Image (cartoon, rainbow, N blue to C red):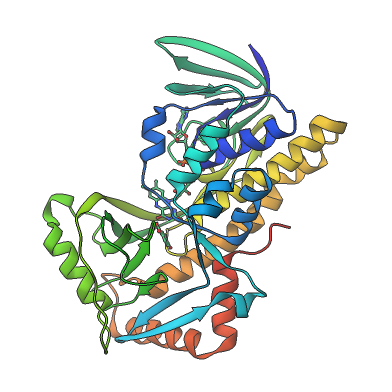
Length: 383
Ligand code: FAD
Ligand code: DHB
């Protein structure tokens, strides 16, 4: 079997790339190792930056997002028992973000899919020189020969391992996030990022009826040690402010612990093989950049592949890695900054405490400080 573009991975990156290419008449096949139910239910990101919203709208995948997503015009930073709001539109020339879950983006893209999308099809290898992808599907091994292979197979995929020479950069953090989904209306209108001496907490949401909350925990922590009551008590403590504000509790419907790391692989291309999304880079989630970076990568790639397919011009493909990495490193820096400013390192000393608080006070007290946070949070324009 032969195809123009073989796409490994049916997460947001692979599905969106497939959709963008099909819309331009470029034949492609998507291989996804899991079942459709699994990828549609996997709880992950929830914040779409302005350019991600624009891309989804422009390619016809924004219809339900525009009906059900929640436009947010700011966030709240909490520290020292005080709340401080950062307003996005006034600081960024009108830009905002959208609360719309990754699960919903994935469902919308699967529903729009026209070309082949194979579930329970696990790629085993991808050869950068020949474009041959070996995969297992329905109990048998198959091969597919591609002009170009794009590995959108996440951090644990086989794409990056198939690159002959990559340099990797990484940082592991001494903390993790315990994330819950709860059937209770959010106790806030906008997201709350809280700095607290007991550790970071984040109040997010999925809809007017469903809350999504995160707690900094020890990476060695066991979910079994976190009863519902302990989770809610800890959240309540970390969000506490002077004045009246109350955290509403409700039934917890999903929970998990995620380690936090920063990771970049360079370059993002070798010969016929390209990396996109989490396959090439990971950011710690504080700042909500992971999904948005994946969308930015495949938007660039779709433009480059369209030029190559249409007029045989490979210049954009040649520029892909360098162009993508510039945005990747901006997001790496922002995510690192948000993470280190808001979390409590177990080895932190009082000097570090004072620096964190000083940084937070500077940000909320200065238009320059707030602007810097806001423009990174809503995301820089794609070009
Ligand atoms: P993925 O979504 O990982 O998709 C890769 C796909 O490839 C998967 O469907 C996988 O099953 C498939 N695959 C893997 N190997 C193979 C193979 N060999 N053959 C075929 N298919 C394969 N970001 C945030 O901004 N906020 C968050 O709260 C947040 N929480 C997260 C929680 C977890 C547990 C994880 C892992 C990530 C989280 N992220 C979060 C990051 C964000 O979800 C990712 O950046 C985003 O999913 C990247 O999309 P992707 O398509 O590149 O990769
Ligand atoms: C969510 C996740 C994030 O990492 C973040 O910074 C904001 C929101 C979320 O899952 O809703």
